[in-house]
Every structure is written in C-alpha cells, then in structure tokens.
Image (cartoon, rainbow, N blue to C red; front, side, top):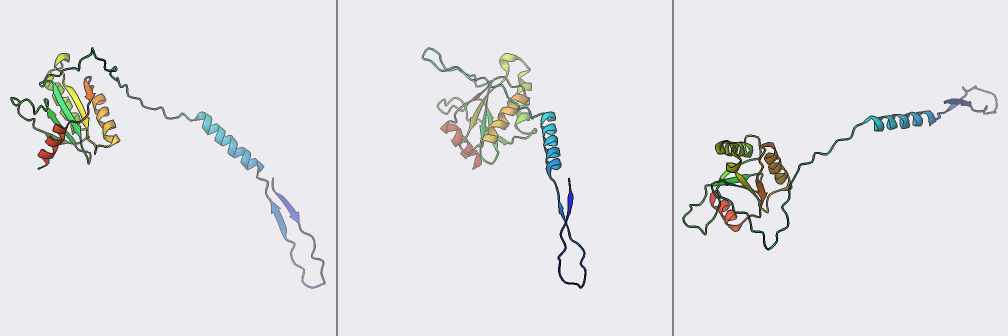
Amino acid sequence: MAEIQPKGDSGGKGGKKRAKKMSTKIDMTPMVDLAFLLLTFFMLTTTFAKPNVMQLTMPVKKTDDVEDTKIKASQAMTIIMGKDNKVYYYFGLNTPSDKSVAKPEIKVTNYSAGGIRQVVLERQRQAGGAEDRLPIILIKPTEDAKYRNMVDILDEMNITNQKKYALVKIAKDDTELIKESAL
C-alpha cells in the first residue's frame, strides 16, 4: 500500500520554518496482481476465432494408363483471372486448331456478387439442374492474377454450389484471346 515517510528536520539556524516535505512510496504489487487476474480471466473466457476451411478435392496422380478427361464444348465454361481484378469468361472451349469451331466470344466481369457469381448461376439455370448437363468450369489464372483472386473465385464456386470445376494452366491461345479483346 502507500506509505508516507516524513523527512528529518533541516536542522539549521533559526529563521523561517519550512513545512516538512513528505515523501510518498506507492506499492505496485496489488495493481500488478489485479492486472494478471484480469489478463488470466479474459484469456480463459475468450473464444478464439475458428478458421474457415474450404473442402478442396485434389485429383489423383496421373499414371500412364489413366487418360485425361475429355470435356464437351457445350458443357465447358472457361474463367480466366486477369490483372486489376478482372475476370474474363467464355462458353465452350478455345480450340484454334479446330477450324470448324468459331473463336469464343470473351466477356469481362468482376468478382462481385453481381459479376461472375451471376454468370455461373445463369449458366446453371440454363442447364436445368440436370447433373449431367451442369457446366464444367475451367479456371485459368494469368501471371498477373493475385492470390486473392484465386481465393475469391474458389469462394464463388462454393457459394454457387458448383460441383465440377478444375484449375488449369492458361494456354497461349487464351492469352492471345484476351489481348485481342482488349483491342
């Protein structure tokens, strides 16, 4: 606790008497005890933030006897993540080697709820809910895409309950398609 300790008399010659100066010494032990009690109380009663984890199924390792999965162009939808938080998408497959198929029309949107989410939901509605007709979404990040964009697009796949999607390396043809659309 606090103590008051009087100082001795200056013991000098007569004259003016000065008031005695009192010195105070404060004992900090109770305050430190209280701080540790409060700290312990709040640590024990606080619930820590639970991490949000998204279930992601990874493909098995490729072996010689397993072929690549073939996708119908009518079921395919390609999403390309570009720079400046832009999302490019087109329906079908970009196969410039097949001259009988026209180049896909590329469109631009963003990661908002009114952006790519509405595009995916509309594509699912067009399929009529039939499991075998649901779109297969190919997600292709460019070198300019940010990690945040990848998290956002995976969140959109989860929100729209899209079951079939794949992360694919971007092809040179897709990069050229984006450059052509910017002109």
